[in-house]
Image 1: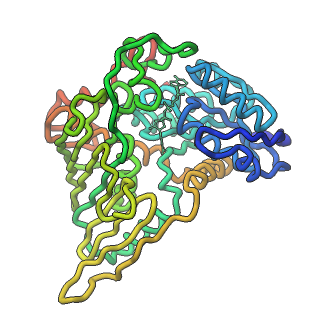
Image 2 (image 1 turned 45 degrees about the horizontal axis):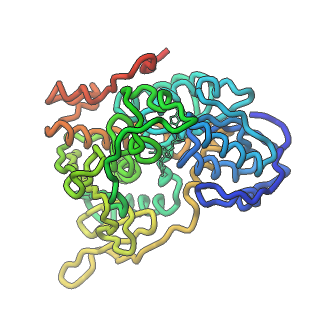
Image 3 (image 1 turned 90 degrees about the vertical axis):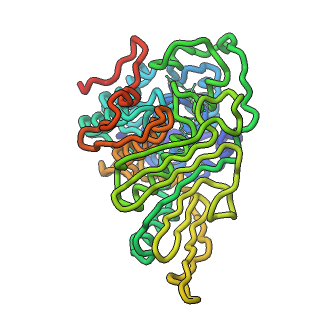
Length: 440
Ligand SMILES: NC(=O)c1ccc[n+]([C@@H]2O[C@H](COP(=O)([O-])OP(=O)(O)OC[C@H]3O[C@@H](n4cnc5c(N)ncnc54)[C@H](O)[C@@H]3O)[C@@H](O)[C@H]2O)c1
């Protein structure tokens, strides 16, 4: 933390890629506030930039360092910050050098999933607080190491599953916990997304100028550059991510775990494949159903690329969750939540609640909670354990799909207990010189 005056000036008219005009962003700030949290961003292109833009709306923050392996993007972002705040952040290609930036308090990690574990363990060891994007890791072992590093170094770590800070989800989950729906027998969660068509196979090509592709790959296997596997669409290739199951899955499954107060399933099975677009470039399935057994309820996850309609909440095609009780169904997505009552003898068993909508910007709530916790040293709304649990459930779904087996999970040992060979999916094999954090 630092006690020095804000350097905010120069209300530039630049617009962020996220669509938030920097002028508006600056207008929300108190220009006289002391800068007491200096943040840096690793991975400046997509969600990382959205997180930083949200964080910088908070009075008392500044961005002093950026890190990316794509030098033209890095330069663009540095210029955008300079034109808006009057001071250019330091720029880096290697996150280990970035972590040495003088005065850095906190780090936002917005890189592809396969990089999160290395970067968060390095950041925690360097004494930084961290906002890390979801899914927290591309494997279950890495997710566990991230929990260990957070606790060992006593850091404040917020995971980007921002429903945890959204009053709309919080209100729905506390309604659920009143018990008026009766026993919840099943939970259904889904991502029926309206994108995913036209992802054609393209040949490998020269690495774009200014991109350090070897460092983009990092611990992932070496391979020639391919545009499909790079910015944004890396999420459909197993070396870097887990498709919709982990991308949207962790957001919705996190809310299932919160609502049902559980952390891991007893077993999981999966069926699906590249059924809609068998010839497109993605490795991950465009159609997948995973079924989990918890002690007192079952959980069904459904994912469909290029669908864009939603069960229970026809008003919008957003991913969502439905808690199915004895008396009715609570259905929720990022847009609204409502209660669909069951009937008996012509009477509703529970009051029908029409759609209730969110009114705040939930990402701003989540970054503000991170900021508050940096100051208070309390655990933030989405702890690293919550991130780990959601990642665990999602990755188990993918492992069931990839292995074609019904898997039993032993939470005490942290292994798949009925198919020992399938445990090889739990831990990635890092490409040298990158190494899994060894706890010291
Ligand atoms: N919370 C949300 O709602 C949400 C939404 C979108 C994405 N995400 C998550 O954010 C993460 C990033 O996704 P995205 O779509 O923004 O990706 P992206 O491809 O748009 O951006 C990733 C950036 O990281 C950079 N990068 C890659 N390796 C790096 C390294 N070693 N060091 C520094 N920079 C590196 C890339 O060059 C790129 O600029 C993913 O984990 C994704 O799941 C979360």
